[in-house]
Image (cartoon, rainbow, N blue to C red):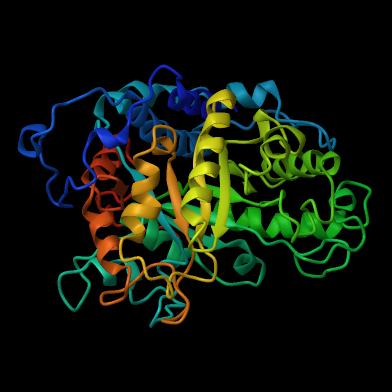
Length: 453
């Protein structure tokens, strides 16, 4: 999978770090016009690492689409449980290299971390849009200047649940709506125990071992992968497959899932991961997916995350990390995790993302009005290492009693609005993001009369 590794390596030259904090957190932006360096009264400084990081991510997604539509699938690859993608597969994805140089020149030389939310256009504090007909989103509600939220923002990453595909729900309208807004699409999977059919916490039957060929859970595992893989392949926009970030077998360094350290061990994990990736690619024919490996509390379990449990560079596209914590300990915990993840991402040549994060049980009860600027996005963006992460995805809004994105009038709203307007964040309407997508042919395109779901 030459495309993604070579491009992601661009993000992490140890000689190209720059501090996003060189541009003040209080530097404000408009989603219509980004101020010039002269207007902002800031001396221009090299920002090679951020420029490369954002570009590498976009180009990698584009490369996946190019590969899906133009590159022939190499010959069959062994389904042995310990196998990794073949050299022929790596060579086949090199078609994306032809867009690399153009995107490098065109990408805006600014810092920023993409802000994401789970189920952003599916549910909010006061709405459920199960059919994607209203176009509602709490980020738009929080950032609009009028009662219709028509001029509000939209997250740069939107997460969805693979279980919905297994349950037969049609998410194509939600996915297309988010992609048309310019969002990157992510799916995660809280997989059932393939041996017993129990939930993600059911440890019975050595499921990590038995999901492999010959195991008692292999048939159920393959059936779920067939459904999920075909679902991910089916998401298209104007004739092209939509690139997807896929997060599965995550938080393995925790103790709460059947695939985690509380139920399994590291020697079982890599074969299960690699078998799953190979099966999706080779048997289901999924080629529009980036695989994100996302451990939990990585600063506490660095060796376990990046040595013992790591399935290998050839089966991982993005290094992720998940972190929830109580409000008092969250800032130091997420910063430490982030620094650890990026430091290892540099060594591995991988782009890094905060795959899932937030205050445990929601932000509705916290008192810090400056949470988003002081303890979350601003904290990360101003750190030399953490300023290089691609995105940070927070959880879904369930109700006014349990949410992770505030609405107007709620305690943390003012800092959310400030984060939204600041250059530390990238939302889907950010001019920097839009210009990159237009240059390389991603996202919303001129209407040709062909809308393909």
